[in-house]
Length: 319
Image 1 (cartoon, rainbow, N blue to C red):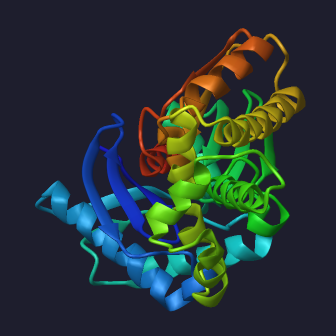
Image 2 (cartoon, one colour):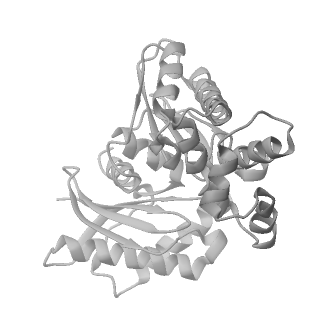
């Protein structure tokens, strides 16, 4: 029996799954963040070790677990320099005698990749297709049968992230302030932001956004205000959602055009908080995508990204 580890490491938490060669999840563990570029290498190592330990503990296997392969899908890992850093982390893991693991790793059985690939493989359950991630940020990533990949977006909140919760929230606040000025038509977003943030006047947005030093995540968390207004029929809010859909469809089309044929039968998996809205953004995106690519199918994730990492690790033992 072969056992492998799949690790999904991000800015808020780390998830590890222990999988056997029948693709069954035997154990699952969670720990803190593991984006080494924001929390440092030592803290990242601690989170990954804790997640692995917790996964093995939940599996309740009496003897030390022999690990034949590992895949680490980590946020922000893409450059060669990043991969070398993570290789060093894997070596540290193997040197750690406190983990209830017997390591049997070869170089070919260590997979290090970004979190978009594991979201694709986990979301669809196989290695071919497209993932459209729209949460705090946004990115579209695809992989075809030949192993060719294409990424669109993922440039961050200043340079990109079109269709993300952050950009939706910014557009919503911008529209509310323009309405207040009299530059644009009336919108319920004005009332929505005031009520949610408990503002006496919409002018107090200045204090909230600038003086409280709000970051990307705090601003992105305001996107549901736009979603609610759109679901309630607000014209301005619906225009913002439509613009987000257009950007995500354009990015998806770019990926399809780059590595698939126009008549390819493929699945597009949607991940991230934006797709959970009440304004039918998922249905709008699916309708526009299928209209352009009739053989495409837009789905919600079948499995979590950590499971996708596990499948990528398992694949290395079967080649």
